Length: 155
Image (tube, rainbow, N blue to C red; front, top):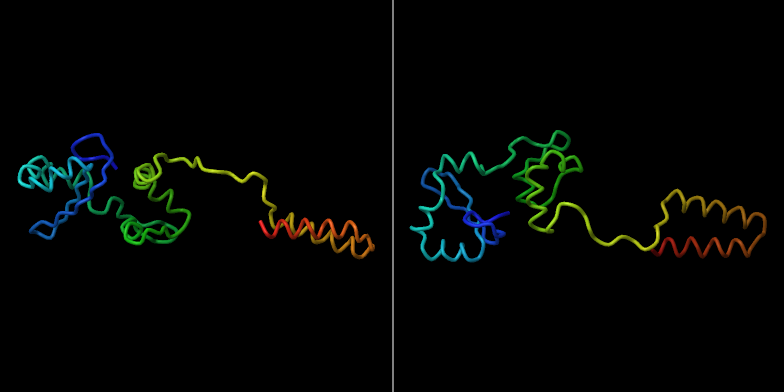
């Protein structure tokens, strides 16, 4: 999320509660936040009018819930947990800036496993071949298969 006054990343997030039980959220970088907190009268003049603020960033960005699990975006913000995989599509517009702020990008660029992990179907095939080898009394092959299964299960 960007600072309200400059292009820097916002690190200070303030919720102002107004007299008519309306809340407005303001986001600042460290420098602008210090100025806002030390000179609240001057900083509040820099903020947009309340009507413009409601159009720009309402308190609950996407009031419509996910069609699959029924969770609302505000519930995600409060708990930090999405309800189902469909929430990524339902709240895409709200999640993209959040993910970019947290991770610096919206695509995964992390580590990948060095070797391809065995799927459950592959492991089942190894177990079946192990039973065949034992049934045919091919104990060398059975030992190799047993070791493969053990190493796959340990990770």
